[in-house]
Image (cartoon, rainbow, N blue to C red; front, side):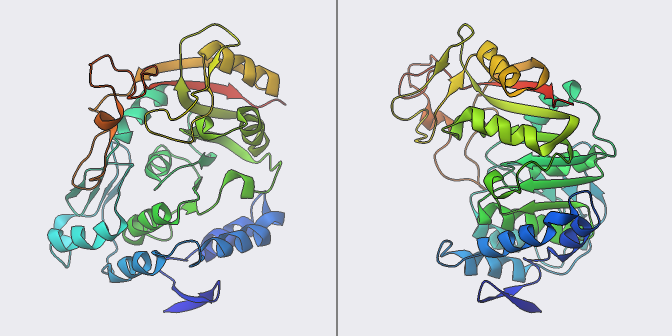
Length: 337
């Protein structure tokens, strides 16, 4: 079954956003439902995503199985091996049409999806420092394929909304939700934060992890995050940081770890000062970790270059350009009342 969207016939296995839009019409952000629906529609554009037909074909090939159990507390495990109506090798071949799989890991019908990032490690680092998610409306900005969204749902969130502009990553999420259950209150929208209506002030918790250093205007991003939160809602921010005093931020002249779109890497004190400037209450730095090949590496599910290719060969931990090692900080703060 399919319906027309963006002048192209799309399968409902991909674009089953109707339950989300219907929820939105009954929610605290009901007045924005139509505009969000229109913006989701516009993102599935063949002129932008030439490989989109292949990604949709991958989703159409997935067998119709209502997986059980769906376990989200200790990881993301969907279904049991005996439920699978194709071999694990056939399922892997089908899902590899959506390569590269960067965030995870997942277990699908007993088959490990060994992603580039062991995103569970980041989750374990931040979980002790955040307000409980039980019963909360949560947004994850720049969520990729939604790994952390699943963990947020497993932590008791009432509803989780992830946003990411990569339609391929959205397709990865949809492949998993296809089996886990389209009724579940979790969605990944193919949108940038700039496409979310301004000043919603609706979410109880907003996560931004691995986004800030890609923004040319970090203060603008912090303001966007603040305006998504209800008064007193919590921001959870993870980003690359560097050593230095308050007021110091490193701006690489060229690439950083081969990434061309890296702008500001602040010191922790600088980032806290930015959060205060934007109006957040009680900003604090709760965790620091240096990324290692144990956390980010190539696998069968992500065969491109990875962290070891981005670091200097002298063992210093510095990037291949000679910049400070990739060190990540987690910060939490509350929106003003």
